[in-house]
Amino acid sequence: MAQVKKLDFSGITLFCGIDVPKKNWRVNVQDGEFELEDFSQNADVALLYKHLSRKYPAADFRICYEAGFSGFSAQRWLTEKGINCLVVNAADVATSNKEKRQKNDKIDARKLCEHLQTKKAKSVYIPELQWEHSRSLIRARGRIVSNQTRCKNRIWQLLHFSGLTLPLGYEAGQYWSKNFIQQLESLDCGDSETLKTTLKLYIRDYQQTRDLLLAATRAIRKLCKEPAYEKQITLLRSVPGIGEINAAIILMELQDIHRFKHFDQLCSYVGLIPDTSDSGETRISKGITKRSNQYLRAALVESSWSVIRKDPALLIKYKHYCRRMNKNKAIIRIAKHVLSRINYVLKNQKEYVTNIVV
Image (cartoon, rainbow, N blue to C red):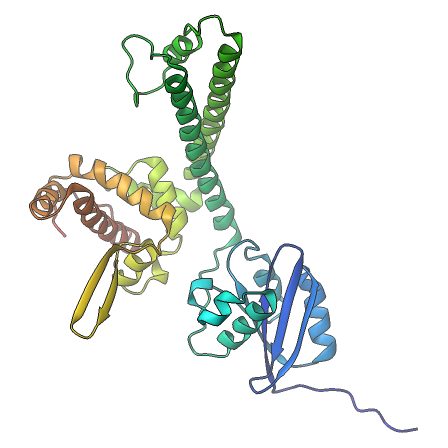
């Protein structure tokens, strides 16, 4: 009987790019010289691991997929199995004009596999599971705030479209108190019961959203008192103008401040740098970059409007900036100063001292 030798890929590195839609994954496998296979499978990381281990036993696998819908669960599972898995930013994967016009899962998987073989392939930050869940709560509250704003806008639109006027003594944009809601419910809609019902439905939608926002806010305040976060929240709140909710948003989005070796890297992550287009002697600034952490940048800008009212040093800087630019651009500069203070208090574990110009 002929002796059968077992396959052994020891010492061979195989690269695997995965396009990860909801139902079916597209997998591309290469060895740095050849494309070995390209196939589709169910969205199951254990199934992929079983296939690769059976077909290429003892190989050194390097795997990557794009950050987004699928999260980090596959990366964590593969890492536990001892496999090097990267989760990359889709914007960092080089794409030709032809690939943009003929986009499909097969091309995307092949691009990821080829990107993985370059020295430019870097993973996004993978948060610890506890921090990821805490960040999910923070972002859920942000979405509820947006929904509440939409509910208000629907009510305003209905009032204007139907020719209804605001209750006497109230103005658009003010705080919606319990008394104001009651006044809205009692508005005279003429003889139209249908319009009255529509208004009440919109108001009920707003009230339910507000109740959800209250529940989310209470959950975040409780989260801030947990031992893992309490000290960091206290440090952030030492910066004048940063409240508990914004401190929680900033902390959960930044997470480990030490992953940013330089302040410029932190500014780039937040999105407080300009988009530029330089060619030869031509230099064009396109304003603030669109590539940002939108949750973190919004929280910083919101806090900056409060900071300039409470920190004299930053108020002076704001007035100085306003001499040569409009207020919205000036507050972006102030947000960068606030970020510098945040970077300092978190890295040095020291509370911020007011009236010190940095």
